[in-house]
Image 1 (tube, rainbow, N blue to C red):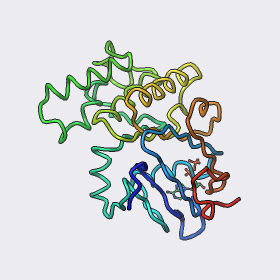
Image 2 (image 1 turned 90 degrees about the vertical axis):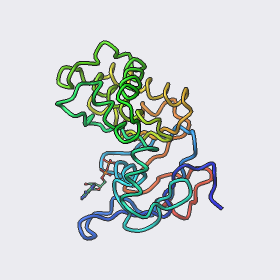
Image 3 (image 1 turned 180 degrees about the vertical axis):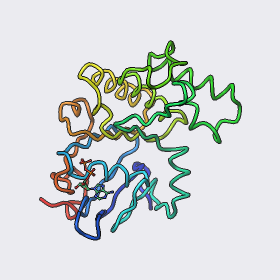
Image 4 (image 1 turned 180 degrees about the horizontal axis):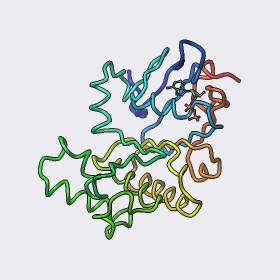
Length: 235
Ligand code: ADP
């Protein structure tokens, strides 16, 4: 019986690159609970981004199972659908489309999900204003500060009301003030919408306020979490 309290899980997952030369993740078991705020920390190169990419099907495991709501998506098409409707992703480098305005960038994920242009526009405006950026709607990414770009990227990730939001070093390219603002926004989103938030960061200070923090070292979870299967972790 699938456990309804879990939204996503890695079970005994390993990811090997370069024909076995690089072991990015090694037998990791991680259960992400619905509505939790989880922070994954660890040094650079320890496997954090690999773990996040596996959780949303942007990468596939060499070994083990990746589950979304208790079942294993079997194809890239299935993962693409999940990412379109259920999973939001925020990248360190923002990944905004440079030729579109802030507002248009947020509208992009709604094509195919929200049929009326006026509805897409209304939702995008609502999200922008929630990020404190209503006056920046018509600006192109190059005209925005790093912190503003990241807030637009968060709004875009939220466009289709995802059940889970994954953020990979969301403050990695920001100064300390913008980092604090972006983290506060992410915390607020999680607490207000009650969605699941998973943030990867090498900055342990950013983990403050998280409900649960796990640490990855050399591709393994360095401490077992209560309820995790310790057999799959190295201690
Ligand atoms: P982190 O996010 O903690 O910095 P990563 O998950 O990006 O770590 O990387 C973990 C290890 O896997 C590193 O040694 C990295 O160089 C390697 N790696 C990640 N992606 C690839 C790839 N596509 N091809 C080869 N090696 C990779």
